[in-house]
Length: 330
Image (cartoon, rainbow, N blue to C red; front, side, top):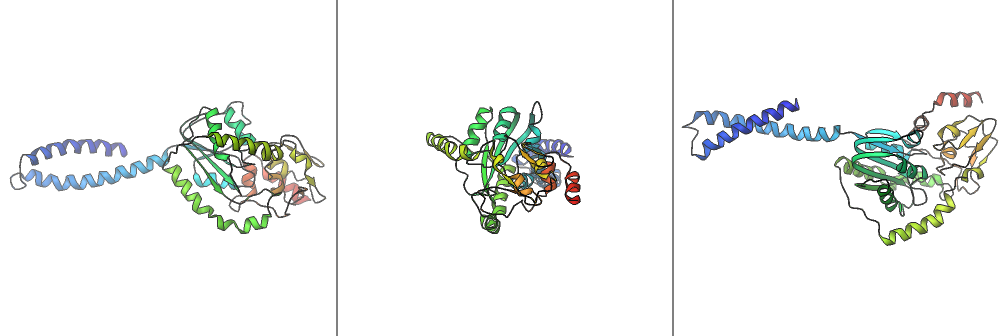
């Protein structure tokens, strides 16, 4: 259909030149009835073609391929990814492949901010993946402060040989239990105008908005300070080994299945290894709220209201039925 429009448009362009030639010679409609018959038809057709070309442009942009690579623990980043659209790819699942080859018109990463940085797995993903795209973007989700997350994205993209065309961040509910009272975070979410900001980000990406991003010497100093303080203190691979599992645990295995790092094994008890991403997926998604931190400020747990537990487990290619059956029997 669109090819026919383009071909007919070219035919009309040829007729337009002929008509213009007649008109510029002073030919009037009365002396040349052919012109009077063709001009209205040509004008109407031009309007129609103009409209169809605009529609074609819109549809062509929407039909262009886009891949979203996401990392999520409690659903915020998955929800943002779904809103942006495109083909959704779980970074933990991609990291299980020997080689990661991604080619598309647009490729984006959506992930949370952990202690001013992207999750360690996301950084490793960028180092491992071979990404070929005309438009590369990075979207963060964060709770309180994004600090130096954007400069981190710029440098990580450069290291991966990518040009970062667009980077942004959206404030959402913070799941960091040592820092926040979860119920207060949930109750104050409307004040963050999440949907309004998300609409703006979606439009920027749809319009292929391009920004200019640089990393100053001051940014590098700040990154060093943040990493040397919060980063080293919080983002430890052995962090989960200090988690407490109480008597409410039914060994259903959901914590094992929802963990993006494969850091948990469940048999007759829960065992934590040394690959923790400190994402708190296990704490927030335990059906019995049996996993706790010594320093947590709240017993309330959170999962994005638009995301189901099944979706989080599916991000790791897990069948929820097996976990649910164990939970039901208990």
